[in-house]
Length: 61
Image (tube, rainbow, N blue to C red):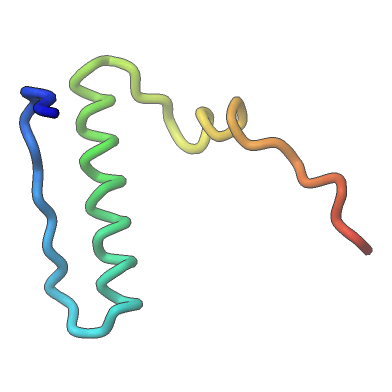
């Protein structure tokens, strides 16, 4: 199934898997921020998380 959209391929430069994972996560975050800025939908800080993330009130103390 072709979506007919541009694709960005990210490749880590770090040798260690854990560092490479963090590197890719930061790159994806930067891409998401750039896309949101371009679309005019970017929210500062963690404002969007306040609408998505709910507190875990079922954890054992």
